[in-house]
Image (cartoon, rainbow, N blue to C red):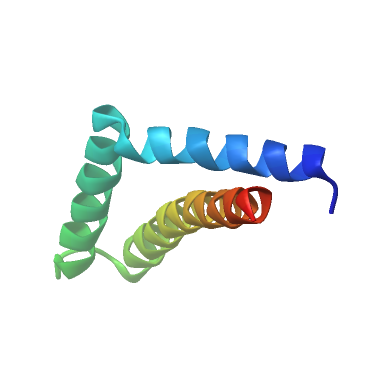
Length: 83
């Protein structure tokens, strides 16, 4: 991999870290996760509602996972650039 690509990955990783530390983003992830989990535990929800809530929860986890992957890739690129 060329140096330019590594620098771009490092830059993306740093931006993703900044996003994951942003108080409004942290709050949004926490509030939505709690909202979905509480609604899933609510026994009055229909099967369709619970399935939709579970899919929304999964989507939230996919977004968090993607940002974590970008951070990890950026950290690895930084290590490669500094070696």
